[in-house]
Image (cartoon, rainbow, N blue to C red; front, top):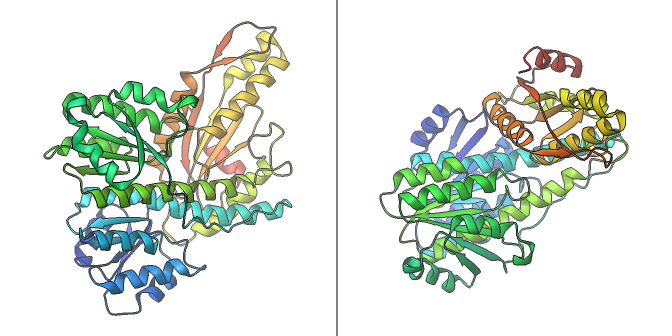
Length: 446
């Protein structure tokens, strides 16, 4: 659900219908009709996301104005009511939109693709918050991010294209000038993403031609999203006409864009470049946020924050959330296996395992989330602007990865350890202290 995020619909057709649809999904909506000073309205409202109508050239001017202003360029903008005119598609991309929806986009598609826009908004907000908290600990975090023109020379992995269907899709890529490597088998394609000899792929174009390929491609998409190294890889999915189940499943598994065959070459090129630019923006923000972890803000384990930093950051997040209707959540992890390891193999091996757990937890979350050690074998994960339901999904994913992984001990113990992790999700409440949050979560550990 929308978790209370604010959406401003500016100068778009069917604004009232769209507002009702978004409000039903949990978003807070406001509409501004065409003809007003829309750029100023967007800047003043400072929404999580703005949907800007571009049925006439004035909408593009609004987007250009907002994206050229340093004070407002952080607001994610999506163009709506976009025609299939190649010139309009390219103009939207050049204006700096973060996504675009053609005039026949269905509600389910808009809702699915709003999620990464909301996440981008959350990353931008967290960068500013993290910089302010870091300053309390003597750390300077640069909040400037400008990757409006990333390197457009990138390479795609084309997945699931059978030999006899190869010509149906790949000629479009030839026309775009984007380089690619095709792998018909989704299982082998997944392995290629982890093969350093292949080099880095900037994204994947996944073709779902039939029900058999749907199952294989769903595995590919899901496994990419569960990989802590690849989870942000742009995924463009192409299905055959009438494949509504394939569309729903692809979005549900984590696809960025899903389109039916035949796909227009200009549509494909603009979306691939937009996805590539979006990834560059998120990575740039992520690097800025990550710079807040330094010796004065980190726990002695090094890869996670100290409880003092978490307490200070919680107060700042609570202040930001006050009166907005947005939710934030936290997940407490308790790892009794560490204490058991100390009893069986000594304190040094327990310390080695504890450090590994910290490293894994820090690597399994989004960069805008924050992990701190809050007890000997307890870790707290704070998820800004995240609903309890979404936090529960994160919790299941993280615990699943930890339970399915093996952890080695020091050289004097030639065996691997299977972790047992207890965890609980709670909503962050106003005026929560770190102790109050931990106590509430401890009562729900399972």
